[in-house]
Every structure is written in structure tokens, then in C-alpha cells.
Image (tube, rainbow, N blue to C red; front, side, top):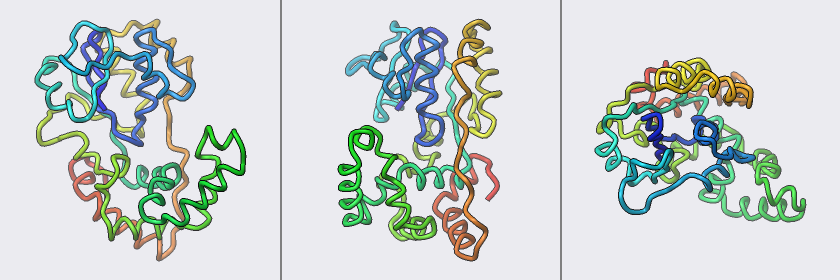
Length: 245
């Protein structure tokens, strides 16, 4: 997804597991829209044009398939994105998107997980993460990575290489901000774009920009093999985004 601020002449491609929900909420606040309880609810209030490119609405959202079209229309805007260490991004996917993985590669386990979710009641229905420990108890991180090594990562946007999602061969970004230093770097970018100091202070009060809570796996021979597989799966990300492999 692409978010474009006509007010501040900014365009950002949202990469899953790279502060995308945080950016949606933040852009909503910048444009005096409700940020939503969990960030993505803010999309309900953001204009999304299905036809022509809109340069009038203060804030718009466009689907992935229109990113290159939008690049032509908003070439004079500041384009940026948030990227992340591929190791940390995949670990976050294991922690938070293992349901998508199991729906593709462990269908029997996925059906049992849905039954667990159903039996645990309304709180679990509203937040699928509450039942994810059941999946983690049956699929280790090393098994997760080995399955991806065999089947690839192109089957779901959350797992696709960041360099592919960003169209790095077609789009020259003014800034690629790192999740690991996002709070400082994004503040600098917004200030340079003309966001008033009072608005920046209001956003800081709303809460810290998200940082990973994922704990690194224990250092074992199995984990070393998993790291080697991650290096191969995301070799273009390590190279093009400048992360040490």
C-alpha cells in the first residue's frame, strides 16, 4: 500500500512488519483524522481513489498495483519508506503471522488453531493473536524457516522481500528509514517536510513509534542453520538495504 500526503508532499510505501500500522496511525494524526484503536482502523477515514490520481485530498491511500503509476503522478514529492533488518522482520512474522504460514503449509494444524480460537470466546475472535501460542507450541522457529527455505517467500506480502515490495529498480527513494532508529529519523523527515512543531509534539505524546518486542532465538546449531537460510532467502534485502548478514 502507498500513502500520499498532498498536504506535506510526502509519499510512503508501506512494507509489512516495518511499522506499517504505526505509519497509518501517524499519517492519520498528521491530517487530523481518527488514528483508530489498532492503527489500521484509520484507513476507514482515509480517501482511496479507485479512478484518477487525486492531488487535492489532504491524504490518500492507494493499493500496491498503483505504486508505479503514483510515482509518475507524485514524482515531485518526497518518497520514503521504512525498512528493517531481515532477521528481525522474519522473526516478527513468526511471532505474529504464523497463522498465515500454517494456513498455507500446515493446514491440519491451522484448522485445530481455528477451533481453539472459537472455543476461547469473543476476546479471541476479535484478536487472532491470543490463540497463536497454540501454533508456536507445534511449530518451532527453525521448522518455520526451513519450510520457507523449501517453498520460498513470494506467496504472501508479509513474507516477500522488502526490496521487491519497494520496487527499488523503478523507484528512487529520498530516504529509507530504518525501523531500528525510526523515532529519531522519522521526526527529522517530518520536520523537513514542514510539519509544525506542535503537531510533532502531539504525535510524540500519543505514544512511542513501535519497536520490535521479538526476542532473538537461542544460539543453537539449529538457529545457526536458520540464520543461514534467512540470509539466502533475503540476500537482496541484506545487500540493497545495507544490513549486515
